[in-house]
Length: 77
Image (cartoon, rainbow, N blue to C red; front, side, top):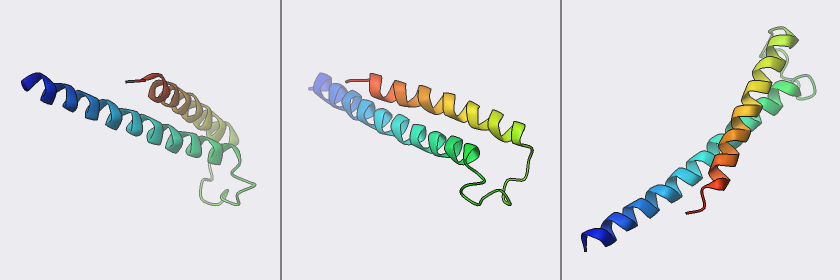
């Protein structure tokens, strides 16, 4: 009985972790694309830093979001 409860909790944690990784990945990817397309989205008055900083931050968010998405999809429990 203890094994079934433990296995059920591990499955729940796996599902929760997968949903969390995918949702955080989508959030980071949305931030990355908003940094890249700031002028087209008319948000350039909100984030007034230099383009180099925006693109650097957008690239970091894009890479980390891609990593989180890969990790969330790769976990096939």
